[in-house]
Image (cartoon, rainbow, N blue to C red; front, top):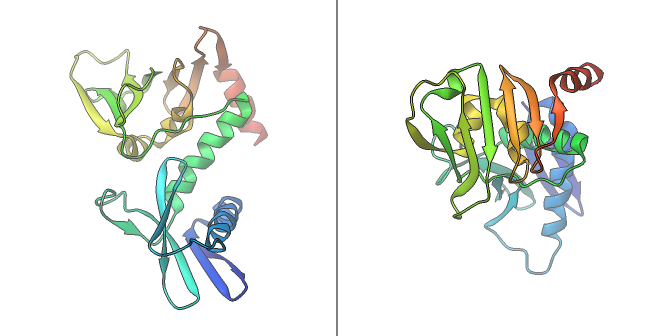
Length: 210
């Protein structure tokens, strides 16, 4: 990973992420810089950036760095000096939403997903999103046709992304949407009206053109 930075009027803000995240990093830096120019700006400072909170930490008198939750330890209490995982999830979600011409609703990292047993280990996956009933509910249910038992449990959104990152792309879809996966490939997406709006052929063609 590398550092990207923006420096204006004697104030420098840095982010650390993969080199391939350049565009996303620069957009994030511009957004944070705009907040530092307001009269009510003060530290500690954090914003909700899509699915996760990001925090601005002062490293010196004129230098600041953006931190993301530490998803590898305890993201509810600890932050780390990078934004790579946050940006990668957002990149996947925004790309799919733009392709489908939809407005998204990305679940927060600290919301729950209902998961049937060890279905995440199966190649075939089914994801269904219903209307959110509670603040800690993402609305998502994950299952697999190959799952032989009904052992439902709640997992945090960030844990789903860690265990099977390919699912992150569809999880900003609105309530009422139904998705099928074959391995890491989106097999189909059905909207709230029961219309298939995405198929594996479209997915393969889009991947080949990217």
